[in-house]
Length: 140
Image 1: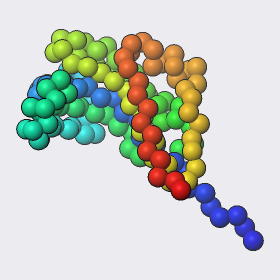
Image 2 (image 1 turned 90 degrees about the horizontal axis):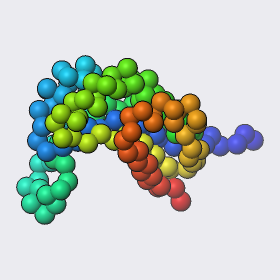
Image 3 (image 1 turned 180 degrees about the horizontal axis):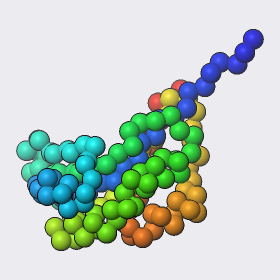
């Protein structure tokens, strides 16, 4: 009998530019990249109850992919955004926006390696922005 196949975690990394109702088309032009997704807060009650939360996010994402090492996912997003680092940071600073890297891990069975390799950290560091790791564990 063969062993049952395991299910790798799904990992998605992104760069997020966030702020309050900013011009996402101007962001796209200034940065020189197309976002994979733009999110806008549509619920007025949330806007009223949490006025400090950004209402608009401009994101470049890798998309959920089977992955056992989060460094691989972060490297994938860095490959896209590092050439545009100065444009990203300049637009964000000029428009009082925040920039953040986010990795989301969805676990149904197997877990990934939770580390960032030194070469990934070296590419991430010049952005001088936050990095968040969100873990959604649906395993038994």
